[in-house]
Image (cartoon, rainbow, N blue to C red):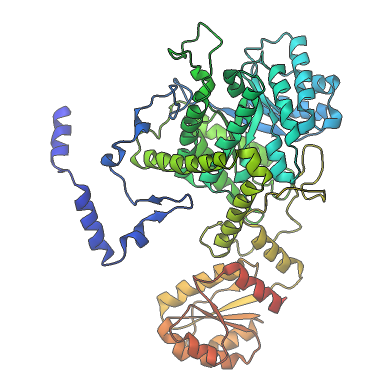
Length: 634
């Protein structure tokens, strides 16, 4: 067999990079290589169309091992097991407990609870956790930021009362005033002083973290990947610095910090993001010279450095920013690839956002599907058995280094500006993310960023049927958009699909659904292609689209459109034939419907001179064009 293998490879001589490039240039037939094949990412670096072994030369990322500092290949050595987390949204403690016990029998091994400040009591905690083996699962809690210490003490009392082993309890308490500042626009920075007492309260619980870095807040506001990571590092460094200055040992402080990241649909980039995140955070923590308090720990440097403290604890949650109200089951496709990214990258726990969360409180069906999305990756695809399967990939290793460089540069810029807290107080971070939010909305409106089912390939026949976007609520029960005094810049949290959804809901609620009739004529290939383009274009506003096989004359097509009671007639043909068909069709219609030409033909100026004003093509701003049509048609 070895001989056959050797003979097989001898039949294929090695191909050099130059030979590949020469072949590519021939196939491009004079087209610009950079413009056609090199991807210019939003992260500020370029991605080549192919990578080879030589692209790994000089990359230190390939030298690492799983479970070894700087943990680029993951914190675990033996497997890639992660916690399957589900957040329990019930407010009544008995109902929350019932639901928690139910989902623990359905594959979940990590629970998230949000507790209103007014409900905090020993009785509430007893009811909430009744019958739950806290040593067997991961427990995560959040409450009003001002009451986190109170919650921590209640939990400690409960754990002691139940005689739980502190070393076996795993979980987190989400204390993060900086996130609150960015979301609400209120200066809650004085609360950061409570971090010291919080850490001391939970100091005897080594696997229970209490300082949250909620970088998913940035992700859900439309941040680019390097921004989410760069600011998250500065965010973590801010809390680490303040804790150590308050007298908390660096090793203890680092072990109490937990990062909560979002996951975008940029599959390979997200894998690289988490790998880069662990590497960069490990080096930041090491700079604080954390000393291991144990004498029997095998993960300690010769200088006493506590390498365990350098491990980044990462929870990942699928993005809300790209979720959609229309064609909501497409959300399942997005969250599945996002979950795969995080699992392959080796995060510690994952929450899959139910597909219907945009327009209603998730029901039993959507929550079950969300759980099963992770269980499929574990139980059937066995993603939990292989550590860092992306290691050695020419592409992903290069992406890891490139993202790390961009994120590190942003981290240094933020530190030079006084750190994360100062940058939030000045509004620099929020403004930066809000600018990205605006840019991404613009990209969606022009279809440079695709939301399947929303700005491209919408479901032609779907109606909202009463569905409308759900407002977020905070842990205190206040609506996210509640008017309150804000002294700081707030993050924009509009989802990418918001404006398209508002447009489509406007159409549906108007009671008049415009009909768009495709007048297909002439060149078969061009008329079919442009009819499909136009149907997708106009259906994004919820219009009824009527496609046709083709007409032999303009008059025949116009008569059919009028008989169909069309509100819009779209002429679909080739550029050359528009000079022949457009003006006669426009005149034959006699203003009985809006007339649109599909394309941007060379004769556009002549057609405009004849009175034709509407053209739809790939360079259009789809959203703005449809808004204008709605004004005229509804």
